[in-house]
Amino acid sequence: MEDKIRAMLTGLDDQRGSLIPLLQAIQSEFGYIPKVAVKAVSEVLSISESQVYGVATFYSEFRLVQPGEHHIKVCLGTSCYLKGGSAILDKFSRRLGIRPGTTSPDARYSLETVACLGCCSRSPVVVVDDQVHSNVPPSSVEEIISRIKGSI
Image 1 (cartoon, rainbow, N blue to C red):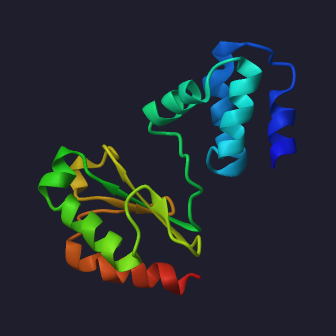
Image 2 (image 1 turned 90 degrees about the vertical axis):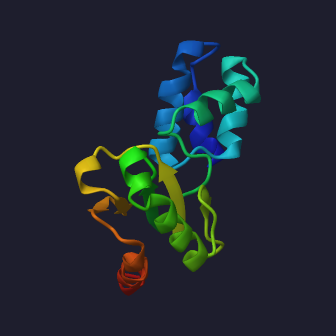
Image 3 (image 1 turned 180 degrees about the vertical axis):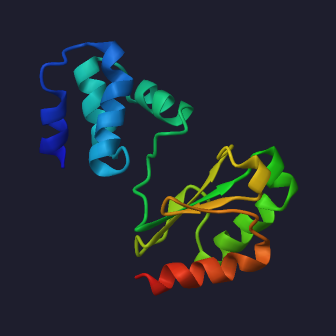
């Protein structure tokens, strides 16, 4: 992995404007931004690791945790939140045994919150492996998890 990251950074001596495109390329390659990549980017662009983390955590598109085989996003935008988004998130969290922003120890599931999925008229909304589930009541979380497990 480190060799691949170093190859991506070749020839970028101190080009700070390259930070976001580099992070995008790394995440595209690995599905997230590994710690070793943060260190390598920091060295090549002559910026601190905390500055790299600052950018990576500011933009919601970046992930610093390796996603699970099945990636679950629960919308907590205003409409989804008011219609039970936090209860849905809590059920997924308890049922899968993971907190939002983490991946299960077996790497099968990751859970995250998003500010808005742009489906407000169909709230609350959950996205599982790029499949949108709309008008999701908390009671259907178990059914969604069963479908995921059935696909493994």
